[in-house]
Length: 86
Image (cartoon, helix red, strand yellow):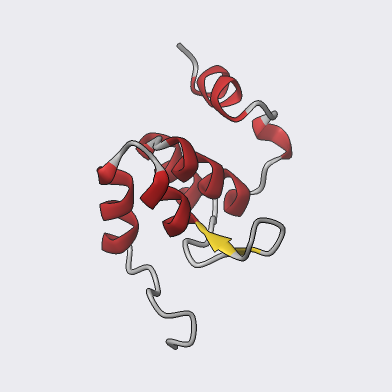
C-alpha cells in the first residue's frame, strides 16, 4: 500500500497540503511512527506548538495515541519537555 494512500486515509487530508509540522502532529495523533519519521525528515519540528488545538504539541498527541513507541520516539528525538527550556 503506498504511503500517501495510507496517510491520507488516516489523516483525511492530502499529504500535499500538510507541512512537516502538521504531518508530524497528526501522525503522532494516530500513532503512526513511520509517518512521524517521514515528517521529521521533511523538516517537521517536534517542538512545534499547534495554537489552533489548545497549544498542543506532537508529544501531547503521541501521549494520547495507542502507540507508546511514538511517545518514546519523540522523547528520544530530544523533545523539549519544558516549553521554557532552551
